[in-house]
Image (cartoon, rainbow, N blue to C red; front, top):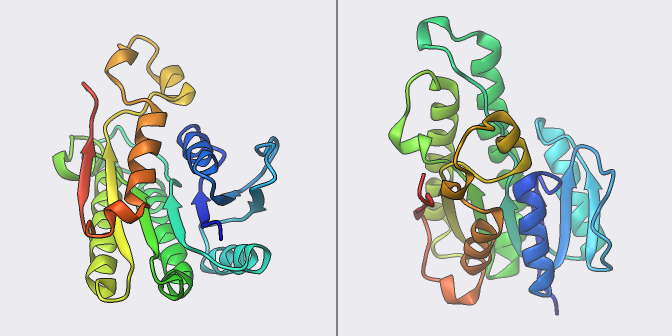
Length: 226
């Protein structure tokens, strides 16, 4: 029976690569995005539109995936965003709240909704996309840094709570991902130092495999040369 993998942020630059990697692996992939314009043309792909910034949106999305696919085995959480550029004394409430909601609270709501099904799978997997900034906390990015540090703590807590229930939970931590959006935001950068999305996808695919059954609660750097 094919494994069912739910990918959040599936329409983004990284999400597209992760989706393709899991499809190539033979998974049934349910891709979550706020709006789908061009979902992958695959009979193994299920496009689900959802607002994951609310608890209700996450519950509804997971319920739809399970109803349409029959089960849930893997959560590949690629949803996230970036904002900042001001010191703490000048950071707006909107930036602070926005980063916490998008990068941390959404992950909490989605994991909470998915966990009963991942436990029922007997070999559930959670792989979240974090950030190098969670550990190195660069200046002027307080909201982003804290939101990603909180994501690390959330996933490691889940790993501790599920270590006897067949579930693993890990975080991959890129530096700068080589996506079209990031290139447009920093056109003078040396893109060869950035991490290609396909390599992050390969790491996430391995973490979802049986070979990684003993890896849980890990914060795994994938920095490239940045």
